[in-house]
Length: 359
Length: 129
Image 1: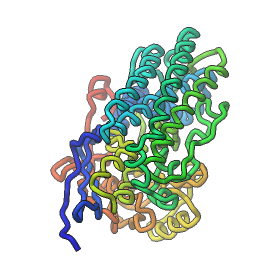
Image 2: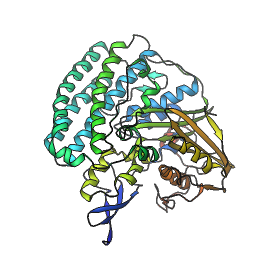
Image 3: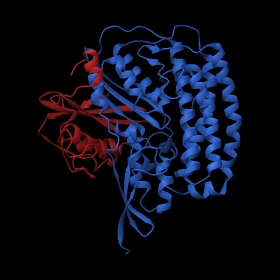
Image 4: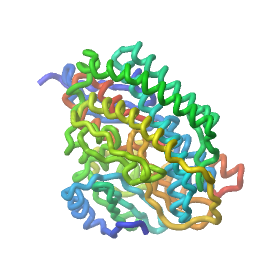
């Protein structure tokens, strides 16, 4: 047996958008085991959620993660609305769906670009991020902001999308889809991409279930589950089936995200087509009591909020379980046995977000 | 009270969790609550989008068994509850010794209600402490 050494991967590494350290126990070039080390961006958000009032928390949770800011606010607001027993206007549900899917598109395009960057395919990286800018423009046009759109509020949404801006979104989707077709061709045929991703970071269906994987990581291991199937926001009115791949490897995770980007285009078109006119928010009064457990599908996977109201303006408890919190554990299964050179790809394949994880 | 929840004792916890594992449930997460004298942990599970919750109430100094022998996925949340709430969890498969998110010299068990911290927003707007 070769001598074992421990190699630190991170907390600063080109494939890590946020800091984590993976302590890799190595035998020559092979990873034997891994120990993730956290604590670089813990901010005490759950405690802050007990100190702020119900409305201030909307702005707090939007800042747990930049990429998923809207879906955090959506999950929080729908939980509080459930506690109030409030029914929000139908148009607000559709608007929430549109912004959610725009976020999914820009998140997945960001990740696909980072994947290309991870193995040095710089032209593909820049091309994908250029397409992502089109989605960011649509977010800015409809909300005034590129990243933290801050359109969700307890009882509905803060602003409507005009007919002119809906048309702008439709034009953007057409352009993104055309450009995405070119990217798809490269992602599915390029030798380097296939060589670096196929058979790398394999996690079986059974392992995915046991390790609590969620989102594209779970669906790339053949499990057809997506929180959008629960029908929150306007998803119950839209034609939707989870995207599933059976490759169980890093390539399958990339394909799920690529196909979900196309699916987001379709869902936004459906939502715009079916969205009725009407109010965009309803007033809620008083302070709620009771407990709720609510979830939505972030780009990275299932996002869960547990909240307990005590009849005051503050929550008794706010618990946030983000997708990476579940997916980071899968590295204990996917990294052992791989080569050191594959660690960046396998780590990136879970689409890690550690500001989410540590909160 | 949330839908599909049932109480469980610390003694019966691992057995109940094993039954859920054997029936194909996915471990979602756990939630710890400070109830004053006691702590409470809610364990959340899912199978085909159907939720199941186990609610366990226990004194703050009680010894609680880890479920990582059944669901290794629980190692993060168990370490978090041990560190931030001071839950006396025994047998966590990957034990960070109370330094998962915060260093040893940081404020201990900050999520307990008895530990008072203030937020800038609370100070500005007269919110609770």
